[in-house]
Length: 243
Image (cartoon, rainbow, N blue to C red):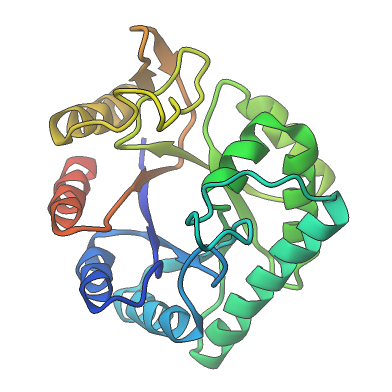
């Protein structure tokens, strides 16, 4: 396997976090940049895009529900038309700034509750796919690698979308291949468990679930979180492991 490394960035205007983004960028292949609703703003988008450009990192839009107070982690029941327009507007906002900085967006990865909801609800997933496919840019769709990958490929074909399947370095998996809810103990791995999961995924294409099951997943990219100094050190180690 040849796994890429992706990270959610551009999610704050706090100087310390911006410094962390700059430290993370040299170690990753793909930057998922917040589009201003759950976090970030136009200035942060521009700064993060420039960091990506300087480091040769691919850029993706990271849209969310309009939930800044809850950091995009609150599910919302929105009509499909409204959800499609909401995602389209966020992609367009980042794409416009990217154009100004001489960068092309490559893909879209939803954030937080929107990501979780689309993985469990086909109607929401269809709305996300429609929003991405309607972009004038040839954007791929990043979503979680699960045992349902073949079905997701068939869905994407209807929208003429390429998929990027991702696994998670620091998240524990439920026995059905979904991510264990953050509300449950053990949902986020310790550094030791995270590195062990990366090694297993890279070497065997499998992950071990909370119940001890060994699941095969077809991942193209591994997501790591780098919102603190410890996270940066972990990302550097994950980069070395993947190499």
